[in-house]
Image 1: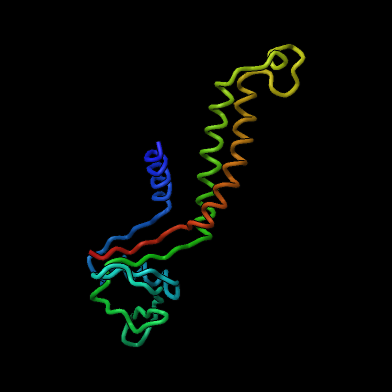
Image 2 (image 1 turned 30 degrees about the horizontal axis):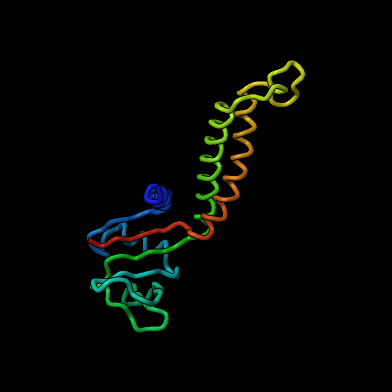
Amino acid sequence: MKRRLWAAVALIGAGCTTTTTVSSLDDERARWWLTDHVASEMRVETDRGPEPASVVVEATPAGLQFRATPAPVVPIENLRRLTVVKHGRGTLEGAGLGVGIGAALGALYGLTRGLSAYESSMDCTIVCNNDDAAAWGAFGFGVMGLLSGVITGAIVGHRDVLELR
């Protein structure tokens, strides 16, 4: 059971990642990605594995340099993966996923739940059939999904990855 839960969490988290794969930094897509993320704090993975420090891209007359905040320049030849985390975009993606999943589950719950004697009677006011229950379930679960999605998305964030092969 725990394995399925972790698989579901990993699948949802993977949906909030954009990966651009290039063969070298001379590729036009790599230049676009780097231009879009100049001055962003990045995580760098090299031939030796992840670097402990975060890295900032600096534009110099000689070209782009990757400078680790507490360390010297990271050689471009050693780069394998650059990752930028955007918490604002993650918040929006989390909100969208939360509302969508919450509304779908709420509607399914409303359609399949049993009605009470009052809800089945002629005197009912708000929920008189399963269609009404589905609408209110979608609304309630959608609001809960929105709140949990916003919080989760803000913490986890969206990841933009540049992969060098």
